[in-house]
Each structure stands twice: as C-alpha cells, then as structure tokens.
Image (cartoon, rainbow, N blue to C red):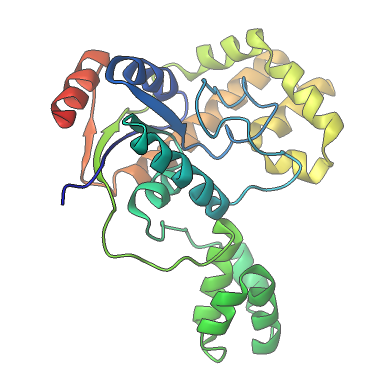
Length: 279
C-alpha cells in the first residue's frame, strides 16, 4: 500500500524556510505544521520569525514544551490534514522535531555532559527515582543496575519528555527539502528589532521568572542586557547575529546527517520538486 505523502522543509535559523513554506502551501494545496521549538510558544512571533501555521503560538512559555508533547499533538494535525486531502508541510529548524514527527523514531538527542556529571554522583536508586519521575514506563523497562543506560534514558527524557520506543520505518513517504545558511544575519536582526522584538522581550520578561526567561534562548539574555542599558544597540545586533551564525552551523551539522535532503537554491526549484513528488 502506498504511504501518504508529506513534505518537510528544514533549514537553519534565518534561512527563509517559514516564508517559503507558506509559499509552497499556497501552490500545492497544503498547510504548514511548524517544526520549531520556539515558534510553539505564545508571545514570541517576531523573535522566532513565525509565520501562520499549525503548532505556532500554542504553548505557554512559562513551562517547557517537550519534543514528546510536540510529536503527539503535531501528529494528530498531520493525520487530520491527510484525511482532508491536504498536503502537510513540516517546516522548521528544530531537526529532532521534524524527525520525530515524520519518522516516528527516536531523534538524535546529543550528550549533555553537564547533566551526566551531575547524574554520575547519584546512586543507582537515586537515578531510578529521577527517571521514574520523568517517565515511569521507561523506568520499568530499563535495567536499574546498568547505570550508563539509566543516565542515557534520563538524558533523553529530559529533552523529549519521555523515552519513546523506536519503530523501524516511517509511516509516510517524505520529500525532504533544505535551505542552507543565510548570508546576512545582521539585516535580519535589524528587521526584527524594527518589527517589535524588544516589545516581545519586555512582555515575556514581566511574565516569566528570570531563570525561565533565560532558558528561551541566548537572544533573550542579550535583549535583557540591552533593556538594562548594559550593552549598546550596535553590540546587541552584532552579538545576536554572531550567536545565530554559530547556532546555524550546529543546525547544519544535524541536517547533514540526513542524506535524503534536496538542498534547494530558490522558490522555483522547491516548487518543481514538490509538484514532481506529488504526481
């Protein structure tokens, strides 16, 4: 039986994937499902470069929204779109969000050396208690005497909200489209500042604890420093652009693990590949 067809459009921060996703959706009878770990939060539309779509602005920024929660909710939307004969487009820069949704497999959760150092000091009983609080089912499955596996399970559950079971293959036929790193990040920062990025930061800062606010991303720390007059506007722009450049490189390293990605150069190429895929 033929698998349902889904398009994934991924790329690093500021690569233009959100606007391209909306363009493709309008041309092929599709709808966008955001696969971005910050666009899911309310009150971050400008900072996260969000466009219209599913899974945008759905979560309270006061609490962390896990990748496991994302997968469960986004999959329901994807299935509904397929039933409506619409083409789902998973669009975003959070690689393990897209992979968890489309492959239904455990995404790559990178090692957390700081967390491992803390957990290494715990007893086997303490580690199992921590894992039980995060994911009781996983705690029942794991060998409590295998410390390495227990710590890895805690590491995964901390990121995803649970330790999902692997499936062998994707439920969907996926066309992977990719955009490469942007050339001028500075202009993008300047544009977002004009569009209300500072107002969003001020609002979130009032509503959230300082710890939670800083967890939302390095830009938020820099915006707070600027609002407190600790850095100049020029320094703010330069430091955000430099931070985004480093982040984009990390994202690209993750994406390059996927040999199925078609790295596209423009809208026309993306539309041509999408139409050929959907024939």
